[in-house]
Image (cartoon, rainbow, N blue to C red; front, side):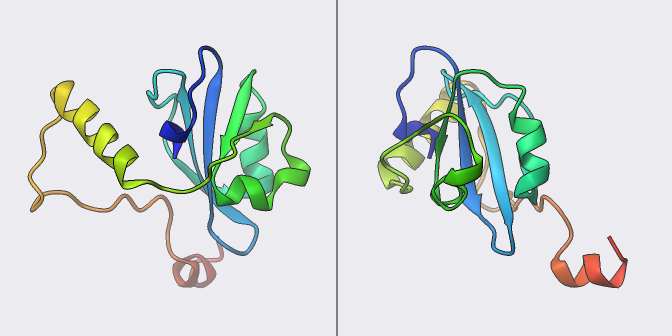
Length: 121
C-alpha cells in the first residue's frame, strides 16, 4: 500500500485494520524501505511508536478507520493493487533478495488471540 503514495520527503505508514481496535503497521521512508520491524498491536500502542516520525502520510483501511486519532496526511487510494505488489517484488529481486515460492512463509507478528487469552498476554 505504501506504493500508492509518491512523496519526496517524509514517511509512509501503512495501516491494515486487524479488528478489535488492532492494526498491522509498516513504516517506510520515501524510497519504500522499511524503517523498523512490522508491528501488530492495539492502535493506541501503535500511536506511541508512530509519533516519532515527522511528515507522515497514512494509507490503508486502518488509517481510514482510525483517522480521528491520527495526525498527518492521508492517502486517497487505500487499496492493495497487483501492480504495486509486482513493483515491490521487482525491487526486492533487483536488490538481491531472491526467494523460492516453496520457502516463503507468512510473518506472524504476534500470537493468535486464543494463545494470548490462554497465556494472559
